[in-house]
Length: 234
Ligand code: FE
Image (cartoon, rainbow, N blue to C red; front, side, top):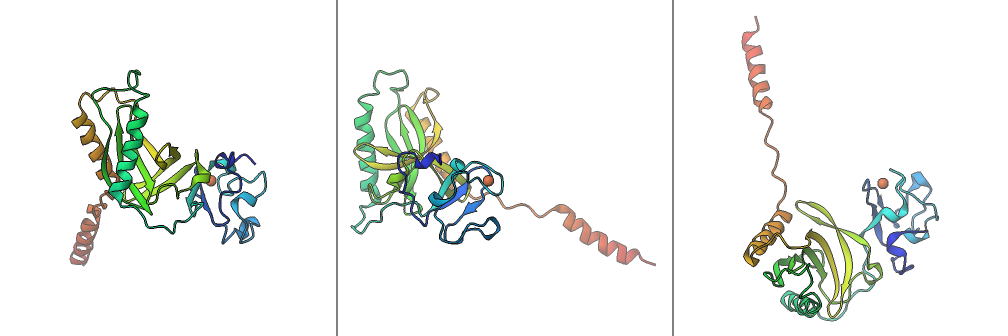
């Protein structure tokens, strides 16, 4: 079976990993299976038939993304504080930058900065600015104890504003980092401060729930019209 996230990591999806169709959001939970489609409870996603496709929209199995339970390893060691993790990430990117300086993609007016990081889903999320890209970035709380087997796969993270697909990657000298691209390259930013302002706007927007719908004005009118009808009845 050619599921994108399995290529070099077959068997590393745990038997409990819940996946979701990336096209129509149909959810496959191995614990429940799906009686309507003869999928017995306890059937891991990786044990589904070769030609499995989404029962709802017929998308290929490769379109499915990890929804939860994708962590290959769980950590027992004490977790480093968020600030230490961020500094570790920045140090790794500063090291990587040495190979980027002088390339057309490298905007010399920008530097590496982590903006607005906060705890989210057993990890930390924020915006990572580099001279060549701006990404939403999610990292597991504890270094490498992330979904190692799923490097190169996509994973959904849920926020008040909606769900977004992050690409699971590994950064040398740091560990797992999942990213959702905001800008790349960064040539439109003439000033680092402008990039920081854009990053702040992005992270604030991410955690902002959509405004509740205003009550439909006609509710008011219909109430009045009911009263009018009553009053006008003869
Ligand atoms: Fe589907």
